[in-house]
Length: 324
Image (cartoon, rainbow, N blue to C red; front, side, top):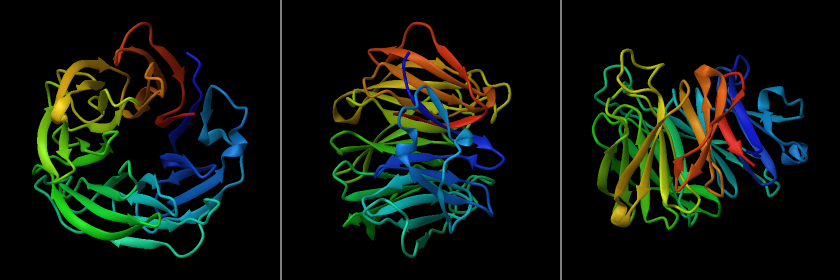
């Protein structure tokens, strides 16, 4: 299948890389403390490149801005700010962006505090990701360590005042969130309870909890919708977090029904440690970064579900895949 895939890998220099594209720039996180940094380079350098493009092998000039928090793991791009989630320190680092998308000016650091019931994973706040609403007016920030979803107004392309906080189920460990196309729903994948949570954004009522598998290895990872909003995908890591588990690493696939309901269609076994994945814009391919097998797996999709022969590409410890 002809796809161009930008890959971030778990290397000695980059750590668990996360990437984002916007403003004709590519933004890449170096997650290794004490050298965590937000790195920026012109997307123009990728022009004409096809197939699998590995960040670790690119020899391009980049600007680096040190992250204020520890173990940075996610980027959300606003019009005038790059929002970086810092897992270990429980912080958000907010980088001001100029009109060209370059980091310029003084960063802001937002601290979060608290804990949860898990004896080792929830001793303190762990900010894992954020998501921007489709209308660009609200940012949600997911705290795995405290079972919280923080909400912020977005004004003039930057994070503004904080809104009322939402509590996730106790001990669930929310990790990643994504909005429905119309913004009426927020879907959240949990790492500790291995569920998809569905919230109605009008009042942030919890509409449903949907288990990803038949076991609970506490390995929920990534979540994403198909471009048309009909199908929801959530990945589950098993092999690297649990022993003697009756299910394998995989991606749970749901059909999105009315009133926020989900219908589970399939559980697709995949390679080791599917930390990240992406769905092609035309809905015809699911691309999974299988870190522990050092492969990228490409699954043809029909009606949201894998069908046909999987294609595998060898890439050293991939942790992020972006489709261009």
